[in-house]
Amino acid sequence: MKRLLFYLLVFIGCNSNAQTIIDVYCYEDSCFHEVIDPEMLFVERWDTLAQSKFWKTVINTTKDTCLINIASNRKILNYIERSVWFNQTESEKKIFKDSVIDYYCLDSNTRLYITTGKKEFYQIEQVIPSIESAIKIFQENSVDPWFAQSILLIESPAQLKYSSKGAYGPFQIMKRVARNMGLIVNKYVDERKDFNKSAYAASELLKRICIPQARRILCEMGDIEPIESELWFKFLVLHIYHAGAKNVESLLAQLDQPIQGMELIKWMWTNEYGNFKNSSQNYSQIAIAAMLTLKDIVVSDCNYIFDYNNYNTIEN
Image (cartoon, rainbow, N blue to C red; front, side, top):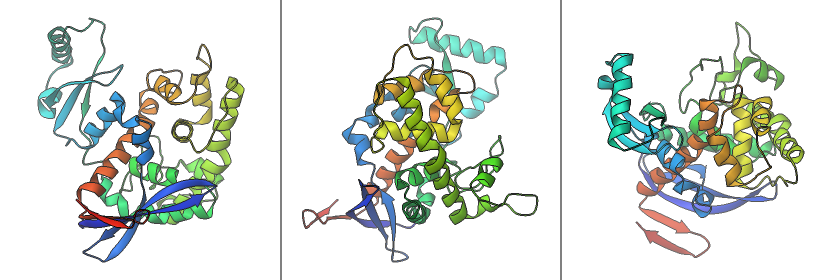
């Protein structure tokens, strides 16, 4: 990717909630690309959670390596070559997992996952140029552009691929949903592949369904005040975008008592119900990891940081 030379921190408003926009300057083509600074992840310590660290490692590990991790908390125990793991029979895989459990003195009922690295899929650097366009489209539709960036980073980043369920486009929208949001999808035309139209449809989906449903679910759970600018609420909305409101509502109905904030999201990461399963649990975890990786890319590739608030230039 083009080398990123410096970025400017500027503050803009969206729906009365301040967003921090980073203007990333690419020297090779002399242009700026806007991205949203995920600083609040650090302020609220989302970056310290085991699941966030795990998925950040997955995003930055190539597909020839697998991570041996504990299913319940995603703690990484070790690594194994992908070819070695997949060349084993099911019986041999079980024996291998049992040996890992014995070696680390874990409870015999501990569930282990063997997760393949996904660096080739999560092409974070290639997503950067498209984020600015999505931000503008979401802003024009009065939808928090934080969602635009988050979804772009985790849904077929810089690629146009169909999911196993039939979702398609940069925002991975299902056919029926796309049509309901005004896109043409038939055997001749599929407007989901059009970036601008797909971005608008995604913003409409969030505006008309995901965000209102998140508010409703929380209000019906008990004495919980939905504050849309808070990260935990945004992560709840992301889960609804991915799994659907009914599946999220069914899961949260299993709570013994209402909880909110980070604790609610962490509970969702470790509980399943109905169609809300592992991939649904992972969704906001991957969003956090992708944004942390984006931050690393910008900071590591920048020579200068100009902060308008302090009127000074900091050399890395």
